[in-house]
Image (tube, rainbow, N blue to C red; front, side, top):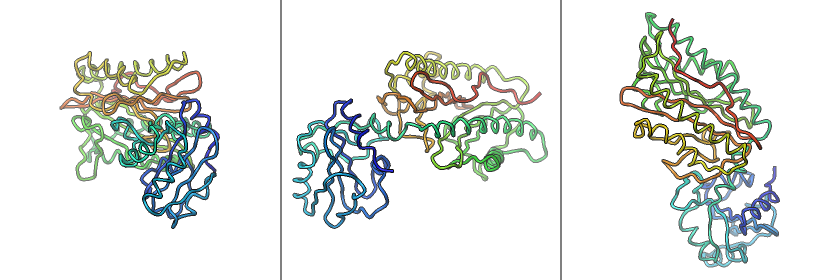
Length: 392
């Protein structure tokens, strides 16, 4: 597959940018590699590829790697000495005054901040203003094809079933001579994944009680807690089909090993559920009205609910992340806390909504996935309304 130069140029004109400057040194920018669909080759020296809003692209490569960008269209300029690089960089930029790069002012969106400060200074010295390519990147890195969308929904049906089965399996094991541990349950889920054609790079995260207060807690064979009657159980489960190009489905559910969920757990879940639903409703309403919405605004909507309830300091991560071929994708994150993600939510992308409250003695999180179409946004799987009581 070749790089979509014409599509990039149309997007650049729509954004009123003069061009998109791709730069890499020794593979530091995987975004550039992916978007340009670069085949593997020896690239040990700096290279630049400039896509102007109009006209032919231009390449700048080192003389000893003169063939390193031959897969891309456009004329090639070469350099060896630094002054030659500086001179030819000005030539490929031409009269461009405003160019996008994988750069983020003040590193507010570190997921796209691949270009080092010195290179930004060099481009500025060549006469161009550097702006962030963040919104451009997500169109080429985060938008799903119809096949990827189908893979997500298919994986979701399977994973929702496995989550239900995991709760049932846990309930059956309570009170047995050899109690089930968090790690045992993780292995049970992975076995179900394998039998169902689901795969994940890591995980799932299985946690009870205070362990659930660590949002990225992962049980190990040596440290896993036993799962017993009276425990609060969190399952954070993500996976995708094994077919090439498939994308992830990522959810978190809560269960209680008892017949009636204690009010202290139920109250915290109600707050997180309200925060989740407020964020989802905000996305739905903006998409239905074709009204622009940025990632930090979704985070603010969810966070305001938790802060109003008095638990603000116990919600210390972003509200959600982009989902793609990696579980944490390169689209807009629902984040106004860890970063200020001003990227717009765009059609054919998907993100998680997963607020949590992590008290010292226990943690609660609820997570759904929201897919955005041209005219609507929707939750892609089952939605938890209350903590599930797992014992009769």
